[in-house]
Length: 324
Image 1 (cartoon, helix red, strand yellow):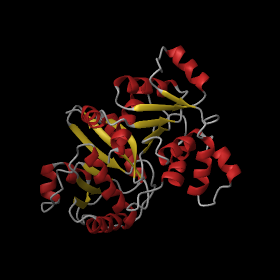
Image 2: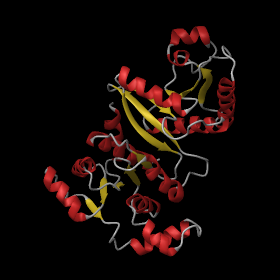
Image 3: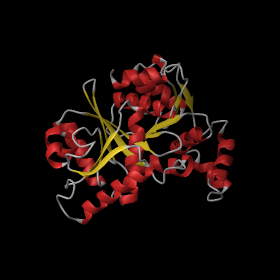
Image 4: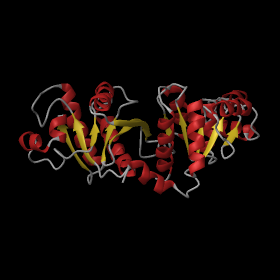
């Protein structure tokens, strides 16, 4: 089954609410209208109602099934500001909170935190930092996660699907951090019907090269096994050893993962970013994400170069994360 058919089946009838802070962007409005019309989720657009209405009129969108909230004038504003002060444990005054929660990303994140929305999708206009900062301050990481990371679902055709991480957040994770990213990525993979077989990638396979960068991956592999002993995970593996069965037999014959990996953990952000873009451009994979991992509630970060279809799909993914 196609990924989005599967995810749509999971979220249908669950009355999930996804908030979009960039409510005046035509890409966002178009995706929200489609999502509302399909009945998959209840979209909440943030922004000036007149400005959103103008976009809808210009583009021929029917926003009658979409909820619109204005962070500047919303009746929930005072309650939200008080909750923000409490959540920040005195790091913001009441006066500061009054201003902060008028920011659409903070307003949207507070809706998620306070149970008024199930997830948030932002980033079409705002930077990753603008999207992630409120999430870290308000939603925060789960008790079993010390950091967030970014993963991409790499999809080609209906049935070929992999997960790459970290491709968005952590520039040079140490061994402990890399291990946590691997375990978290396996958790994410299951949401998207991937039975995780995790490869810890390197330019070395089972000691074929010696370098501090290799040592980090070896150590991360050992830590990941301690964090989740039941997880099918191995490293260090070169990509061909992780992916190609014939190469795996030569380079890592005793590995249960080599040759059959479907979750690929890159040693640093540089490698991860290059890797997913090569697969996207040379291999004609659709790169869906980044999906932020490790938060108490789902917050998704769009690329500023996204189109309406990207917004639509990432909203479905965010809704599916909210069920787990």
